[in-house]
Length: 178
Image 1: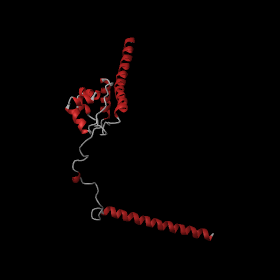
Image 2: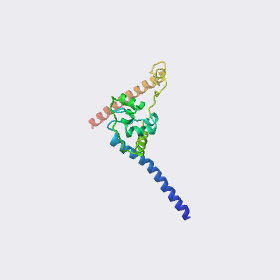
Image 3: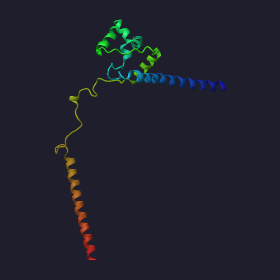
Image 4: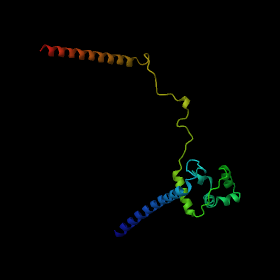
């Protein structure tokens, strides 16, 4: 019994530690991203530098680590992707972040993945010109039952108002004659 209880407690501790670790890496990445990257980058929009959504799909993690550590070195070595980014963004060189560890950069990548918005290129409907609205204007030929019901309801309301006015007149005559 004691062994089962101890095993259960250990499993619970391990579960909470692994989920806390997963959130911690994203939280650490967010802190680094806010402190170091937001002045030039956004995850889903281009600012001074490129939008970083799906950067891990455009480049390998090793390339990203090397670029973050020293973009100047990669440009001077004529890395085609680094030179292309340099030319695309008005030949502005990203500052070196050689003090960041590989794990720090991976945490930033985890944060970027968590913040990446998926954009669908499809329209919410396939052919908007062929959609038929669920609106059919009223016409006497197609909706004569509605018009008859409407006229009967209006006639009943008018009769009810006339009756109420006559009742009020009778009450006034009775109260004045007393």
